[in-house]
Length: 128
Image (cartoon, rainbow, N blue to C red):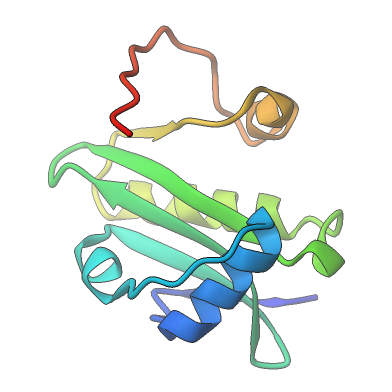
């Protein structure tokens, strides 16, 4: 069972490798500035290899946002994403958030509902 770490600050290479594998497209980004402003970020590690990740962004007040939930394809269907989101929920609450939001694609509806998220009406403008 992977070890869950709070605020691990993985390297850009580790995150880019995970995101590339999980999302099926190349990623090349430095996440230092993003993670330093996050309310929390949670990593799942198997033998010191980053196999899962979720970022909890926030507005500096009571609203937090679950972003970038990712698990290595060869590690899926083992409950890792569920553990990451539950830990993100616990830490966000502990750090003062009253609301935890998530946006997701329709095929993930069952997963996020099972994690306790309820549907809401929301607006969205795609900027790019």
